[in-house]
Length: 105
Figure 1 (cartoon, rainbow, N blue to C red):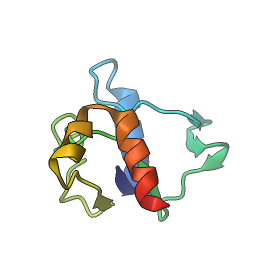
Figure 2 (figure 1 turned 90 degrees about the horizontal axis):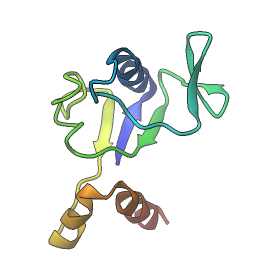
Figure 3 (figure 1 turned 180 degrees about the horizontal axis):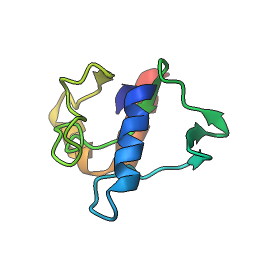
Figure 4 (figure 1 turned 60 degrees about the horizontal axis):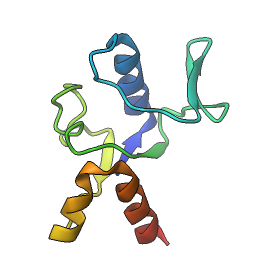
């Protein structure tokens, strides 16, 4: 899970929409572009607000999207596995989200 600034999120989404099937994009739900404006559930993404995004650690290494990496100041925090049991979750995004929700409650 990554807490990401709205301006960076927009950049990542734009990059993915221009990637043309290269695989460098986020799988999205409740998010779309309307008249050139990225929206979540009908609300424009705020450049200065932070959003939680579920993504695997490969994306945050900048391998697919070069500017999406730990050094980017638009990333507030990355929740990484802390033990062997959590490391096993890395390949299953559903398990990562469940673990994140447990931590936040």
